[in-house]
Length: 387
Image 1 (cartoon, rainbow, N blue to C red):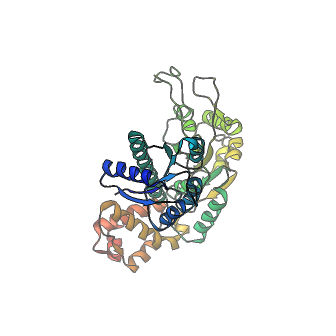
Image 2 (tube, rainbow, N blue to C red; image 1 turned 60 degrees about the vertical axis):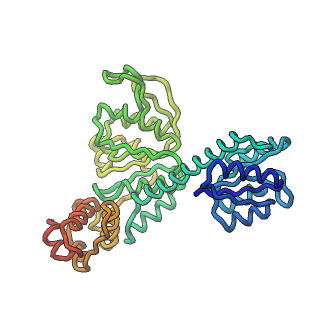
Image 3 (tube, rainbow, N blue to C red; image 1 turned 120 degrees about the vertical axis):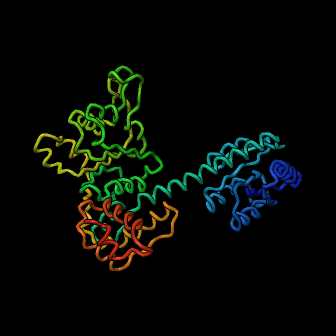
């Protein structure tokens, strides 16, 4: 049920607004305040989905109410009510965070459309927040070992800057998690996070994937297409397994980093881009440079900050936390109660050689949950972990 607060010192206007809204939707829960001070007190004490607020009022005017209300509840939408002489002020309140304004006397259709649109926008804000929380949980970094604590501390320092980051480490260690944390904790978190798996794209298509192409640039280019760098404009591009990128694509990436512009395949037109680059690899890039497979100048451009993610065997003390995390996540995904692991089962799993790192541990935990008993025991581990 939507809850609306009407703050208006003119009783007749207040009654009209409440009558219009109550007739539009019987489910609306409507409350009223006769001045700004009373309105602010109600906002402090209650949860509202929308505030309709007059601009000219005694004790505290609408502009002051908007400023104070936004400090108390930043996401609360305000629709301002303006008299004929208050239009300029009403427009200014939108710059201050108000959703919209309506004029006196209130027009029925204008009022209802504004209220509906304000609710729609608020719903999108709520959904986006929930989505971000969900995404954040999907990329949560689990662990309290010295290695992981150092990585978390480095992320806190590096994320707010635009410094380029190179993430290294074996497959399955969680390099992608580090990249997402860097983005989520950065000033670019409201912008896009675009991922490119350089190892999964054929070398002849990598340039088109990164920089786009124009129609006719090659046989299958039937229309113009933007690339990943354009898609990531204003945000972060994550170049995973960059050690597998072709030398020709590396040259174009280097130019993009040097000049903050790219050109689509088949075009000589420059396109400006504002992108933070985070790269990752499981290869020894210095050896790749020696072998002529990776550009040294690109390496130095990308590796401003180096973050090395350790293998799971080097952080065994995190395994109990990871098991609990995966068990909870798998139970939520499958709609089941979380299964407990016995102390002996956890101890045995800590002793295993995790060549596949965290990815392998997650798969083993899921297997044990499916095949093990009500509580996963040491015997279940010996029987089903199959190391």
